[in-house]
Length: 329
Image (cartoon, helix red, strand yellow):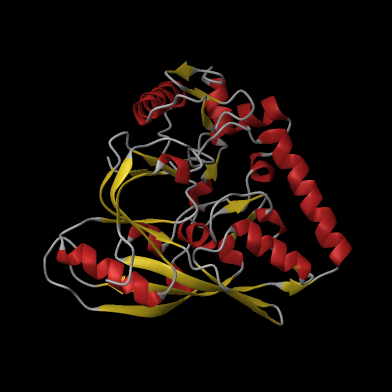
């Protein structure tokens, strides 16, 4: 075996939430050959697979993950003209930095967002009116054919997905809906820009994030912004905030006049800002962030998330849905 397999590796330190138990088996991989070997090992030993990227947007169970966690460490990249190709393990911070250093614009919105480019593609990450889908030309992913819960080693092959084939939608993609697809790398299209303007945009994004984003450990935005056609609810939001709902969240005008309403406003209106259960809290700075106060457990998060959903549902008749992914539950 060329890969270094470890047992009972704590996962909490590898996540932005700093919550969760250990991985039964854990391996770090940097090349396609290592990924293939890790996946084959899981199939041979009837182990469920979880791919760990940057560690944001996930909540790991207190019991951990009873399978094989594969941590993608492929951080290679290259820039050619206005195209940037990067491995799935490359941090968003590095991607944004390299774009800036090469006077390429189009990724300033991702300034300060934790996680990896692979995770960003999987969840179609976005902020301030932009999403990663706007930059993606193609994504290379490993297709794991057949069931991984058998002792039979199935065929493993990589495939190039075009932007359209990625089936991007709000915080979603074909990769998020199909666990048999493992992102390996991607190609992004940017534009030549003015270095001073790029730097100024990044400074402004950082300023906004400092104002809004809590410092305590969290997985990022917890709930998706839900759709509604409730005109009274939309009117109340616009009166309360002094903003048009279509200005507050980007490109979310849908058919039948369904519009996305900001989840943090709904949560705050339900009186839950600052609500604490166990070692976790609804952030007083941004109501769509559940933060770890230092002793948080996954069970605390589950109870708090359930309370939030119940209160919002009872108040507005809206069912909130998590943006984060549950691991090991």
